[in-house]
Figure 1: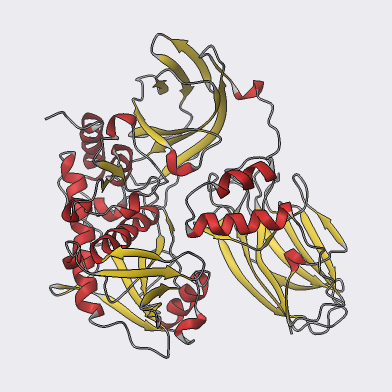
Figure 2: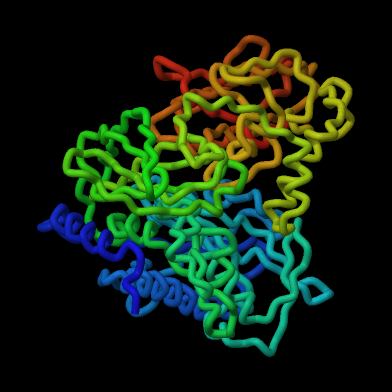
Length: 570
């Protein structure tokens, strides 16, 4: 049997990590689980027994993935009470159907209030499984739950959804069928076995994000015909497919395992948990040899990382197709990243540095490869704006997932924009300010934008925060201001003040403020990459409303702030 790609690097890394944590008392770190349901319905039938089996199956999957590389593991340490997993039951404030795929932060806030003392989102890793599923008269199961994950070494959060048919014991049930739908997507006819592969795999995938894993299609040598990367395109849909004779089964890539082995949940050590390494960005040096493209870079961190891997893809494809490669760190603290011969085109590369305390640092840049196979540095690139119409046309040809349907809906409003609604004359009781007429709009980078960031790159075009895609929002790179004439005709303003996910965490600290007729009405805490906070204020006496974002550092580099779902109501 061939030795799995990356096994030597992973085992060498484990020795470094074990040495680093030697003598530390066990932290007792666990993944906490919440079952959330609406106030008009009870949890779905047999939820506790089914979810105990589901959590056991997910834990065993992670254990097997570690074991494949010679790493001893007991799997995911979910919180337990005796021999059973401890699942905190929380009833929401609203009826079940009042919650949607966009209710993640509302649900989180309700749980934070109702499970105070049990769940602390500022330091816990929390899996929320919702009972937001019902059976229509046509027997289709409709899922209306948030479904995403985000996190790192210190904290994490992910959402998944329950269904009365969700049960790993039914992964072999190919006789019975069910129809699954969500509010936006087309119904899908499943065998019960395939449904469980999709949705138990979805839990494993979103937990990967909760632990800090990016989308990763794996290394080319890992792409066997019967394997697919859990964190890559459609990988979450193939949990233990071999049990029902599916064509591919999900695995965690070598790069993913390399990162997970230092995570505090798995090391069970809290040593230097809050220490985040500084990373100075340095130019990459490009060489070409008989093997292909070689990229070199000096390491500029205070402490030496235990490992490095990269994600590489051409810039015209989505991040789910990132190819991961593990690279050695030289004795002189220099990275030498060897890639094979690359076809001509524009490439995006993200370099991940991994540290023994579980922290990670990443940096993303671009390079181009000419038709002669020679790589050139980013300084020689000239970026052009995204062709929105071509982007829309290409997405129409992709598989119609819930995500692509939402992106198409957003792009359609940009390709064929409607006239902005005037808040003074609008007759509805609810108006998104990203669809409204503004009196003034200025941003600190590029131009003001409705419902997208900028046209610089497709990868960062859509509004995302904490792993979730939003349809409505005002791009507000600091320093920025949006002003609206309301004429005292509206009662409340609400939004999520947020920062984009995909940059280095220390960059871009900002503060959001709201002004009414020149008076300060609201000030947010300082937010940085991947953070958000809900806002809701009274605006009954406001004529002129201003939404402002200010950078709090000495510069405004990477202050990718945004007002998500900015809405006025009466």
